[in-house]
Amino acid sequence: MPLYEFRFPATVKTPRLARRALDGQLAYLGPEGESRTRLAMSEIVTNAIRHGHLDPDDEVHVTIDLTDAGARVAVRQPTRAEAAIRLDRSDEGGFGLHLLDEVADAWGVEPGPPGVVWFEISTDAGPGEADG
Image (tube, rainbow, N blue to C red; front, side, top):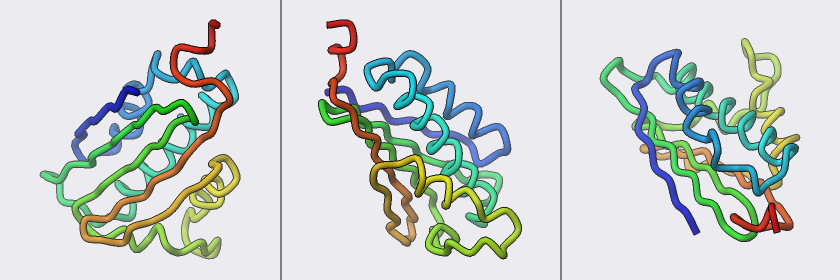
């Protein structure tokens, strides 16, 4: 199954760049699965950029693993992913991880460093089976 890896600069443009990296790769998940995957990835990339205490020279590493069971996306940052551990709505923002909890079939955090936040979206059809 395909495995894609991307490195992006730690800038406010990174979530958009990461979403573009998914273009054309997720059709087998169906429209809902593709939408959920793009939304969840955008949220965890944004979280890494906004709360990761990254330097301008740092990079965010995105891994997209497409399997028969669905998609697994992991976002690694060079710093700790401690902001991802808290699901406190009293923080500024703070809704991204609640959204991730709603749209992903599974997700988790490896605090690090490096910190990693990952999620999975399941499907009944594997890559290449959507047209079948």
